Length: 407
Ligand code: ADP
Ligand code: ASP
Ligand code: MG
Image (tube, rainbow, N blue to C red; front, side):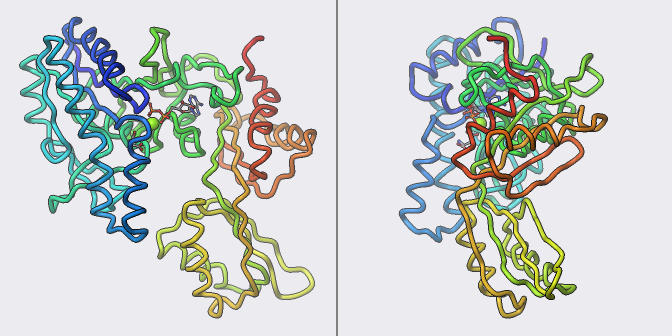
């Protein structure tokens, strides 16, 4: 008898008809004699709607109360799935975040899971009861409701799988697995049978939202057997594995993009020790993540420009923070541009092959796409480009690296 965690995303849970379909998937695993825990997302669009209510009520909503509101979407689908499973003759019950409990840090809106109580859960599973658990939500040690950041139900599922020492964690979504790029942008994207944790982690962190970054991090750390597959078909999905389980390594695993980027240029910064520290120190203090950074040395005068990116959703706050340190830093002015996106190529093959970056730069140049900033890691190259070129860039890079599926 195996222990299995199944996670169903928003599209799979959108409406009673789809929830019934999910229940038939759960029934299959129950009939095979497995112990089954199911983690669910809110119905597609619901979390956005709830976030919208909070903003409308107050742009400065208390993050703890924001969490109370946005966590509710998952409570609804959890109850509805338990009802549906019961109606189909299966034993099932809900375990909300505070009931297990899923204990988290107190970083409201972006909390980290610290611990999951498994006593009640194991009792239920041993008695043949399907445990239905809302993703995305938890509770602080002090008893307040938290949420894990957008897309966080993936992380809930992996954390439950790790806590139960489950044999598998199956992430059911609205595409058939992990592709070489977003199949909604490139119809010729190829489904990968396997991908390494390392590559999946990098792809997720540069924007491939098919899995939340933290879920991959956790699966890698805890050795959770993670797969991504479709709720709507029986095709085999993608298995996330360690490097030694891959026989023939491709040079590039995939291409990803991130629209949540804004470019900030600080013009005429004094070229002296401490200036950059003052700029980024202020942003860090405000909890604003800086991603790409470009700084040139000053040539003919002791001033330089510093360019970097922040999440587009944080640009307003970043501006305020930077204007407040203008006199201290001694810069001239700030220019912001929201019309940018980041496009990245990821692959462990890069570690041992030269010329990967040049292929990227040439493919973009051939289409007249200008590169505004570049960052690299051992297995990733990212470029910042104008947003209007996003789809074209992803498509030409997919072709340039030989990733297109046969026509
Ligand atoms: P869920 O609600 O099931 O969590 P998400 O919308 O969070 O689903 O994630 C699935 C989506 O991720 C797909 O619909 C697809 O558009 C997008 N996606 C982005 N990059 C990839 C990729 N490389 N492979 C598969 N899907 C991707
Ligand atoms: N419902 C949450 C969101 O939309 C969490 C999730 O679906 O993973 O971000
Ligand atoms: Mg998701």
